[in-house]
Length: 301
Image (spheres, rainbow, N blue to C red):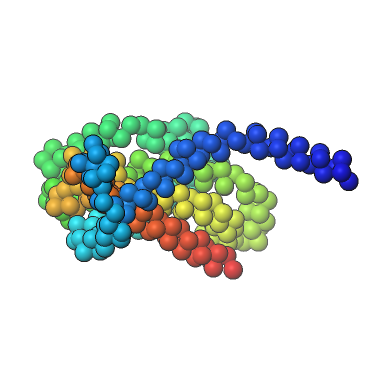
């Protein structure tokens, strides 16, 4: 027994030595910055405190309370929820539709089309934004030219507060659907073809097979894609930053919580307020993730 206990102790020590470098990196670059941000959110740390940290004062929850009375923050939060609730389902639907098409037996050159559909994901956002700005141009844009063919007047996509966020949603869905498409294709490949053959012999149509076989067996894939898309879209920053010139305009119509946090911290140098926004965003993402998991489990039951 003593020999076995000593062997287990040496094994545990060896395991700790192996994971120690990874744990050290996690603590240094993840845990400590998060803890520092939490401390900063309880202070009025600003540009002056950068040169003299003693100038920072502990204000408790004042930064969080100020957010509750800030109409710009609520505007940014509403824009973010609009982006998640509209852009998330749109992106997932496009991904699933493309995956179903590529997984069909009659489709030729599926690998080539997967590469084409995935290309926007790895394309730099600046290049994508430059192309879409031309598409959205109020006078010479391709979208307005297409609308003009059917008698619809031109739309100022990025200059009209009512259309600016839908334009961002459309661009983001086009850029991001390829990543989820690859995951859906992998999920579809894992479904046994024998199930579809048996259902086809029993007289089930394509819609019935999709509803009764494909969707239930893709439930884990839907959960993963839904969670990752929701978490990523709540952190909306790059798209409105590039398309609006970093201001979130027009009239804060494309201002997201992450962009508002950036402006607070790096444009107005209110570091404490920016840290508080970061933790509020974390709480929102955590709540949305837990709700989505609960709804998913409820639908499976």
